Image 1 (cartoon, helix red, strand yellow):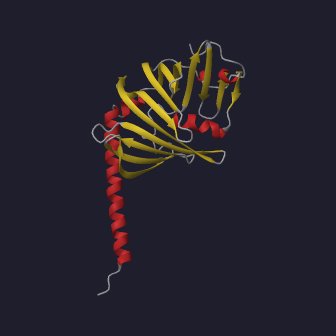
Image 2 (cartoon, rainbow, N blue to C red):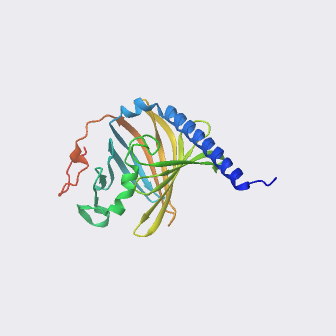
Image 3 (cartoon, helix red, strand yellow):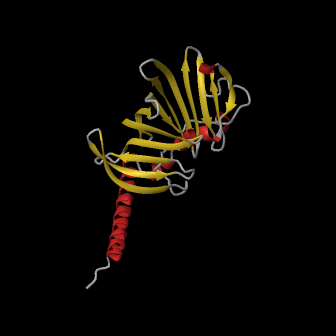
Length: 249
């Protein structure tokens, strides 16, 4: 009897796909539970964090970040009386760059804004991924500093890709590998997460370290304080047309 290997291969592919889908659903459920549960996550409408931002071993800046559901974010970094600002309101991004000699707000190009837009959701890439138009795929496991972490590929609606690594014991994010194309060039970065703390019933990382793969530059954020559901006006995130003085204080 002649064996039709093509049919056997198709059957195995279907079984593998079903197994991967089951594993993915299980991991997402465990991650959601570990973070604090969907209702608790949705109850956080705004999040304000503050701490320090260090570039390499040279500069340490005071850092504040404001996030408002569903997709608004504003980050501030201050040193010696100067404050750099980057903000995204869900449709438009802008920045103030005093360390480059530009003290007036200026709009960012859509490509340059994508990093802000990708990181804007308070709960991260794995929560509400379907409503955001993302696609998820389970990629098995990979060693992350001695831990066989689960890998989930997240393809965002805009085409950017994030590989999210989950700790196999606690099912929290421990690493994200981001890939996006900016002006025809692939930009890759790796972000490690640690020191999770409970904020209004939801666990957030208080230690965040990002390495740019192109030049090896590193940025470390250490969160000292976090507060949920702080009042934030939409104007905080919108392009001001003139410098916002004290709006975020």
